[in-house]
Image (cartoon, rainbow, N blue to C red; front, side):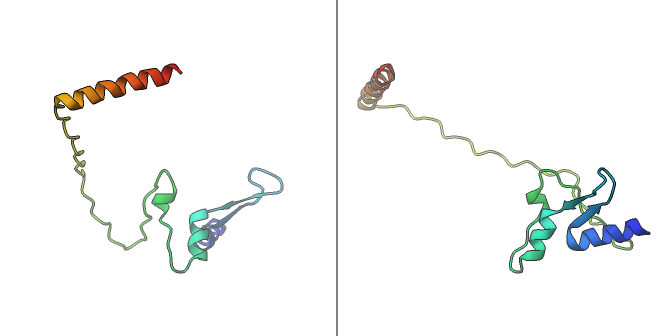
Length: 107
């Protein structure tokens, strides 16, 4: 029963005490998302944005589970426009820029 009280305390405060588990002095784990959410009133931090891996929401007894779509469609990437053909003046300018780039690298 003590473990349940510790977990409830952790969910409420974001502080979990590891008394004598790994060290003789004990250790404490601080959940930064819960601590920051407790200190801000106008803003809320979403755990999935903070942590690199999400563990999913916890369901309470009696709560219906939310149905999720099995597969999400991937977004199509916008295709880059194909480069247009250069006119003769633009080709001369492009060649000049390429020569200058090469000479600048030699310096």
